[in-house]
Image (cartoon, rainbow, N blue to C red; front, side, top):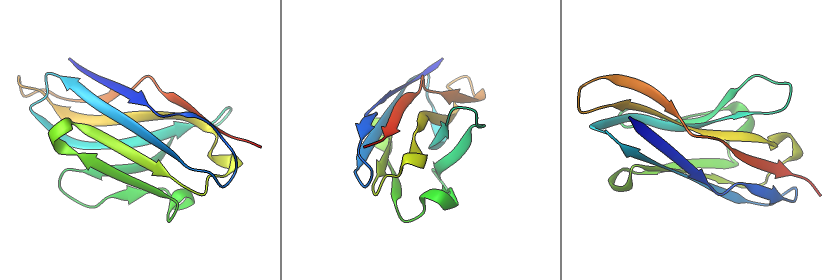
Length: 120
């Protein structure tokens, strides 16, 4: 089993910045990708950014140039640096990981979610 623990959400004014962190732990042989999704009230969950271990990083068009995803593979941790935040960025942000365990099973895992509220 794999656990994802997030931190860093909160309330910020428009134009402000926040940094989210997520650390994976448990039966991890290989992490194929880590990323962030978000869900605003009344809307479906959407991809914010995802960083494969091999391959191209992808961002939602709405966050390009404002958000930056990064990983520390030694710590099984993914970060999301969010700048120039807008009220429409308000959502619950959830960490995601595509993990192959030591028993070779491959599964998707999700964090519990952290609230980001952008408001004056």
